[in-house]
Length: 123
Image 1 (cartoon, one colour):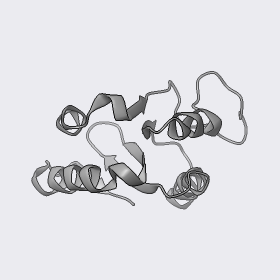
Image 2 (tube, one colour):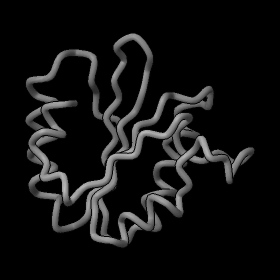
Image 3 (cartoon, rainbow, N blue to C red):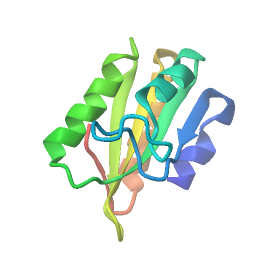
Image 4 (cartoon, helix red, strand yellow):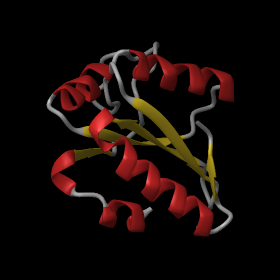
């Protein structure tokens, strides 16, 4: 993932690494979670957003539904999710702005082609 981050121009992206991941319905205002409104704020300021998410105990369908809900509010964005299974399972959620889609897609697709077997494309 360092390779991906190194190839992106930092000023166009916001990487969020919360203690406990994205907001959950039982704790919508926890300081240890990234609130959807925070991600939307960065997206609205013309940044693509990358969120680091340790896998929750929810079923995969519930997590994916949460990711899709996040993407619904970012008009024109492309949602990409990469999962890393090395040691502890975690997702990297990409909300990619339209102007960044060609370059980010090329980087992510290239990364997945030559990556180790621990990464997989979820969305």
